[in-house]
Structure formats: C-alpha cells, structure tokens
Image (cartoon, rainbow, N blue to C red; front, side, top):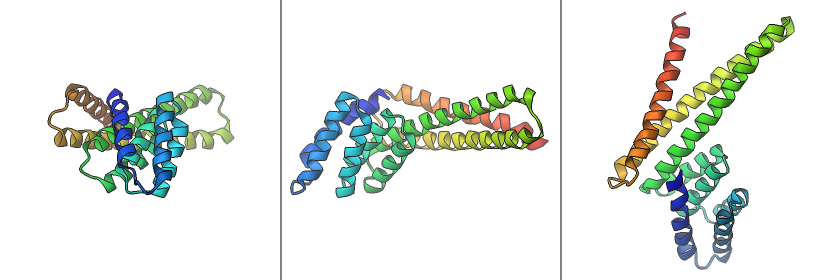
Length: 202
C-alpha cells in the first residue's frame, strides 16, 4: 500500500507536465486532485480525476491516480474499475497491475469480513427463529456464501495481477512484500476451497 501511495505523487507530476496543453480544464482538474490527495481528501480527488477522465480518457496517469485515490478512500469497486480502464489505455504500465492486485485483495477482505459478520449474526439469531424467519435466515446464508465466493474470485484476480506485476518488473525493491501478499491471497483461496469441499461432498 505504501508503494501505491508513493507512486501517486510521481504520476501527478507526470500528469501536470504532459496534460493536454490545449486543454487547460484537464490540467486544472489534475492539479486540484493532487492537492486534495496531499491533504488526504480522497473523495474530492476522485471527483476531480473522474471529471478529468470525462474530458480526456486517454491519459493513463489519470486512471492510475483515480485508482490509488479510490484505494485510499476504500472504494475498491471504483479503484478496480479505474485501474482496469487504465490497463486498456496502457497495458504495459506495470504499476497498474500492482495497484489492481492490492485493490482486489483489500476488497476481498472487506467482502469476506462482511460475510462472516452476517453468518455470525445469523447464528446469534438462530435461537429465536420462528417459521417466518427461517426463509429470511436462509437467504442471509445464501448471500454470505455468494459474498465469500466473490471474495475468492477477487483474491484469484489479485494473485494474477500481482504475479504479472512481478513478471513485468524484475527489479522490484519490495518483492518479498508482494510475494507475501500473493501467498496470503493463495492461502485465502485454499482455505475457502477446503471450507467448500465438505459441502460439495454432502
């Protein structure tokens, strides 16, 4: 996560210097977004960056900065959308894959925690279940299982993107940290597979 935030300042400089010279509005929006990012106002930065993309959707730096701002704001769906959009514009920019993997992994953790909380709430409420609640509780369980499956798919995508980042970038200073994140994602996937196994056999 520190790497993603560190890179964002470099990219804002690039956006400022390479922004469409004849499009002052885009340059102004990116400058304002950089200011908001420095202040920790990620929502305002995201709004400016999205407006910038609406005016000029060819600047890969803006997609990247929007993705990093969204990760910082814990808006992982928006981060994934922005970073995937940037990959379409510049697929050879390795840092897209790193930040996308981080966003997917953190989003999966958030989804999984929410699913576990729902299952925990269901267990607590099970003692007071009447016939009307049985269907509702069953629906909650199905929603939780669906959420856990979504989290697992996000972790798989995170592994793919983080691995691609390492392949594209041989001289990564924090390789061990990224490899540890990949291992954590793989461990999550394996745990989910083991948990689902007995249910599949029943």
